[in-house]
Every structure is written in structure tokens, then in C-alpha cells.
Amino acid sequence: MIVTHLSLTDFRNYQHADVELRRGPNLFVGSNGQGKTNLVESLGYLSTLGSHRVSTDHALIRQGTDAAIIRARLEHADRSMLAEVQINRTGANRAQVNRSVIKTRDLPRYFSSVLFAPEDLALVRGEPSVRRRFLDELLVLRFPRLAGVLADYERVLKQRNTLLKSARASGVKTNQLTTLEIWDDRLIALGSELIEARSQLVHDLQPEVERAYAAIAGAEHAASLTGYLSILASAADDDGEPAPDALRAERTTAAEAAGWFRSALSRLRRSELERGVTLAGPHRDDLVLTLNGLPARGYASHGESWSFALSLKLASAQVLRRDSSAGDPVIILDDVFAELDENRRGRLAAAIGDFEQVLITAAVFDDVPEQLATHTVRIRAGEIMETA
Image 1 (cartoon, rainbow, N blue to C red):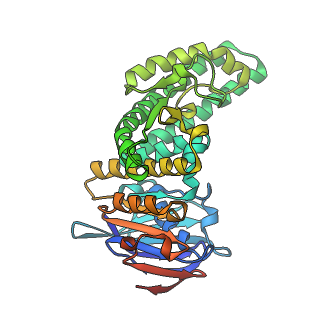
Image 2: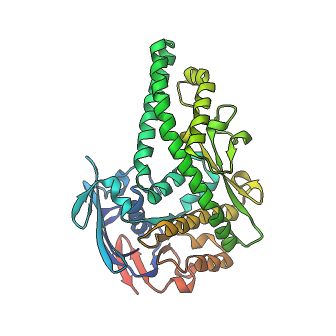
Image 3: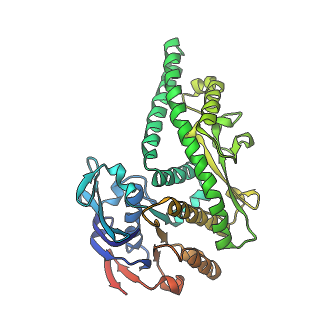
């Protein structure tokens, strides 16, 4: 799938913008703060319903306006589609496909992209929540129905935590424990489904990450992924180093996860009642990254961390490409080449060369390999100045 036209209204610093895009590489060039990242951020939002830069939608709406609109013309196999989302300052957001209203959460079914930006260095160096979000966003792109499972799990988790806090405040009562067991059953059912889906995803990502890292950094380096399951930890995880007994390299079925989850909740019952919070489950899991047998977090250099994070995104694109009947995801590289030496720039250009469409932003034109600069859009102060 490719984007042939992007239109923005009151998005970030753009009052209005129209950009024609081509198959293959598209390069957006402009000084920092001019709006090139805003263009690709809009397409990232269209496929994930979230920004890679901010956690709330309000920052995406131009100051002094009530709504922002992202509209993209998509093409695949001689078929064209118009996808649109309106981000509202008040009230629910709205989405349309070919001018017909759809549920906003269904929009990622129609368009997928994989975006890599400097913020993604947190995939390697950041907290577990960053890696959980990475996995879950990819899961939803791969299997859109899991968006509902994730939302239901968060709702049940919130209800269960509320009950735990109430029990802590008032002293444990028999009826509260009975109610807690009901929420346990629902949490286990939803959580086990998520654990199985994440486990399968990590299994599918592993060989792609190995290949991507070797392609970018060289075959002498070995990158690997291992799932961390908090339900297997012998003690509650307080966001320190992953407990060795909770590392799980093999795929985990929902049935296995359900048994371990129930045992964990039973084992942790007293601690949960004392602390008023659920101490095990997908919301406390992690993805452990290793490089040459050592934890990437803490041991990898800046360049190695950058290459590992980029490898995760390239691996994601390969997984989505393999699963999709709608063609490749659009690859978006936001200010990536400035961080790479000349050798790695060339390696990255080769790694993405066969994707249907690649969107690149750069502050300096010469940072980008020549073969990726065949279609260049120059941007200044929220305006499209020149297209070549």
C-alpha cells in the first residue's frame, strides 16, 4: 500500500497542507522546527491512532482551533481509498473511509505504517512500558480485533485495582474476596490471550531482528529477544532487573498462561491486598533485549542502541508485510540518518530499498543517501515550498 496524497487541516503548525507522494522513497527536507516531522507524524497517527511524540491528542490540534483533520489517499493493486480522521479538542474523534463514517478504532484496519524516530531509542534504554506499547501497537496492526482485548483487559485491571484499594482501606471482608475472585477469572481470561499473542509476536520478530541488526551493524553482532512474564516471577516485580525465573524464550499458549496466572494471583494475594495493586499480568511484563549475550539496556553503546531500536522497527515491517493482503506497510524514518555513520546509512538504504513506499525526514539533504532522494519535498514554516 502507498499514500499518493496527504492533506492536513489545522494539524500541528499546518493551517492547511497538500502533499503529493510517490511510490518508493520520498524525502522531506527542512530545518528543525519547520514541520517536516509533523507531516509523517500525521500518517503514523492514521495507522496507530496515537503519536510517537506526545501522549494526548490535544497537542496535535493547531492552537486556536477546535479540530485537526488528516486525510490520505491510499492505493493498492489499482484500488484507491480515502481515509480520514478528525481529531477533536472536545468530544470523540471521528473517522471516515471513502466518506462513510466508521468507528475510529477500526481505522488501522485500512492503513498500516511503521515509524522510526529518535524517541524510539527508549525501546532499548527506556522503561518496560515503552516496550509493552511497542508490542501492543504491532499486535493491533497485525490483528485489529486485539484492540478490544487490550481495552477490556485495562478496564478489568482498573476495576480489580479499585477493589484491592477498597479492601486495603476498609480491611478485608469475605464478600470482597468473593468479588475479587470474579475479577480474577476475567483478568486471567483476557490476560492469557494477550500473553499468547505477544509470545507469538516475539517468536516471529526474533529472526527478523537478527537479520535486520546484521544488515545494519554487521554480521559479527547478534541481537535477540526474550519475553519476560511477571506471572512466572517468584517475587513481585518492582521494575528492577528482570527476574531470571520469569524469562520465557519459548512460545506460551493461552492455556499455559492461564494456569501460571492463576497460581501467581494466589501466591501474591497477601501482597496485593497490602499494596492495593495487581502485581502480575501483561501490564507488568517486558521484552528483554540482548546483544552478544548481554542485556542491551545498560551495556549497549549509543550507536548499538540506535541500531537495535531501528532493527525492531524494520523487523516489525517485515512481519506486517508477510501477514498483509494489502501490500507493504509504509516505512517512515524520522530524522534517522543524522545519527548514523556513512557505512550504516548505506546499509539502511539497502535494507529498506524493496519496500513499496518509504517516507524520510532530514534537516540536511546530504545526510540521506542519493538513492533515497529521488523525490524531495522542501518545507519551511509549515508550508510546502518546493517539490522535485
